[in-house]
Length: 223
Image 1 (cartoon, rainbow, N blue to C red):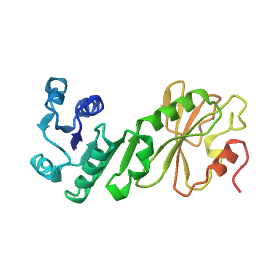
Image 2: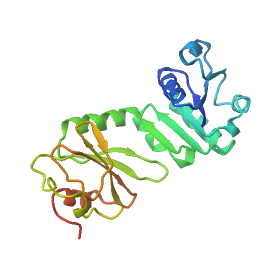
Image 3: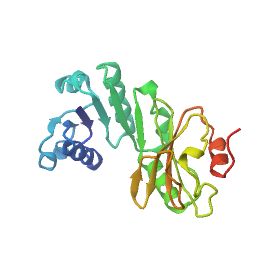
Image 4: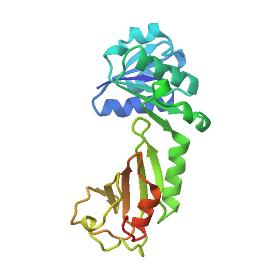
């Protein structure tokens, strides 16, 4: 894929390096000359310019790219970059960094954002996941589909321990996507037996009810 990253700070640079390792073509844009740390991602194309301005986006042929990553430290800039990429250049996918959680409500379709990534929210979810065995934790929400990724670590005394995955009737719009056991991710099959301390990752649709999933996790089948 051809990917544009607006913002060459520590976040943008880290993303660029990871994407390059995976074989993607990456263009990094920043308006600050001091941010042009070309040697730290030498295989990327580097452009000195303001990604909030149309001439810069035209210069890098944004219309030919697949993904725009707005990774600056300024929420206003990330919103403008996403909106221009989507409305002016028909960008298929936009991913925007949310710096201030209070601004998260703006990062949606109206501003051209397909996926909003809020570091404080993700870190909070990870902390909750680490300390709350037996609690259902929402890890991430996809802004386009409104689907959620939820996680629970089964306690030893969970009524689901010892049951086959295929024998559990999950609520509507809820899919068991992965079991993490002893640091190994497993693709669930009907013949897998659930064990204590299994981490269960669910994808739940927009209309899925958390209460229904909690009832199943408590050993009560959905009505």
